[in-house]
Image 1 (tube, helix red, strand yellow):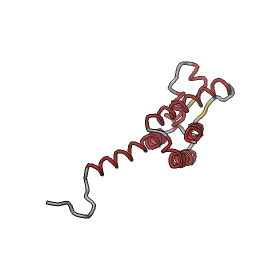
Image 2 (cartoon, rainbow, N blue to C red):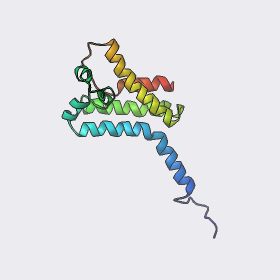
Image 3 (cartoon, rainbow, N blue to C red):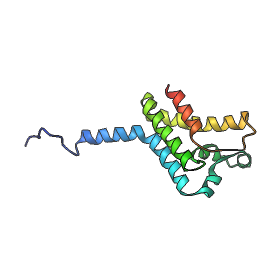
Amino acid sequence: MGQSSGTSSGTSSDRESWYRDWWRWQPPLLLLLGSLVVALLGDELGVLLRYQRGAIAAGEWWRLFTGHLVHLGWSHLWLNLAGLLLVWWLVGHAFCVRLWWWLIGGSLLGISLGLWWWLPGVEWYVGLSGVLHGLLVAGG
């Protein structure tokens, strides 16, 4: 039997295309999901995860990374997520997914260490804004 001239569903090429598209959007979607989960689980979790100088000094090193998933409220979260999708739409094609993950990790850590070393007066920080700027610069 021959193949019809219409589109066929479930072909290998369709699955590969979907996987390629998913893989390309994996970094912003996982950041979006992580930020949403933190917001949905409440303010108590946010306090445990945010960048907080005193807690980091006491050995809570995870806060250097997790503080960027915490937001001040829903409007702050939605603005950062809209910014994330905009940055990804503008420059998401610039690098492979693996390199984007390195850039995201580097931005997370770079912003946190920059706050630690150069802005010692900042007691706490939350949000993706710094990371978004790092990704935009990297992609540019």
